Length: 402
Image (tube, rainbow, N blue to C red):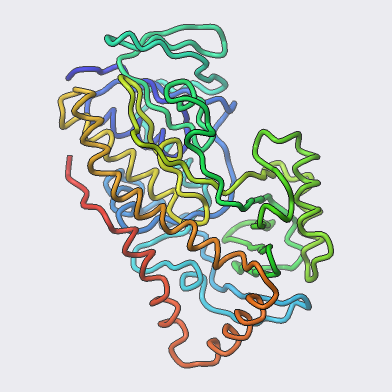
């Protein structure tokens, strides 16, 4: 097998899944992650379609099922807290069959535990330089150390440092959809029990939910960029980002002021753009990208985690099928994954327009329609039909048994 020494930059879901499968295929992966430890908690995410099969082949599907959020009810509320519409959590989230909703931190723990013990995983380190000689890649780290690897894979997310080093500045590849997303843990002052409540206003949506076994709750905010100004991960300190969030939701009703204040000191508070990564190619020489670093579909797509799992499985499999030949392996990976990534990326812009309604008229019509639909027989079936494009996208790839 050629090119056995493979560095993976990023110990997220894509990076750790890739490490698992590379080792199973006989490679020697090393993982580096700039965070000091695996990140716990986080918001809830979905595993759908082909990604469920990857979880099964990885050996973590039974644990995924046991760790499901078990959110049983989802409701839309108005400014006075009245429930305009309610449905099951799975219907609201567009899940069917074996699809599963799980906290990101729980899934990260499961894929971390699935990585064989002999795989080197280094926390508190990051890549700062790449020198691809054509025969190997000399990697410089933030600590000042240098090491040589046969291949380097960037699995370091939307704001990938590896992508910037190998493919150029972020602005060439990251496309802002015009919205912002914020989230953080909050006290469960509403006493929610495996329940999700969503509030919709012109240009902004806020929601809060509790999951099985959680003492607290999570708040999430989606808003149009013109409501809160620039707010990327690099745009100022924590106080500035929270101020942007507070400005976007100033004057809103229901429990929104309390939720906004609640995330101020949350240890997991973040605010970032809803963006997609679009690239003409996912590899350059001996460096390639996987997951959000290569084809982020945005949180609005509902498919970011599934793309990470499937992409890691396919990349490792194609490299193995090519005997470690990176030229053939990277080409096979892109040939198989690109149509799947693109169809799932198309979900993002369409979904966010339904999640964040731009005008008072749109909000009024939507609330009226939801209040009527909830009283009709077969409401769940109508919602399931509306989610059909998501299910088609989630299954739009044939997974080889590498």
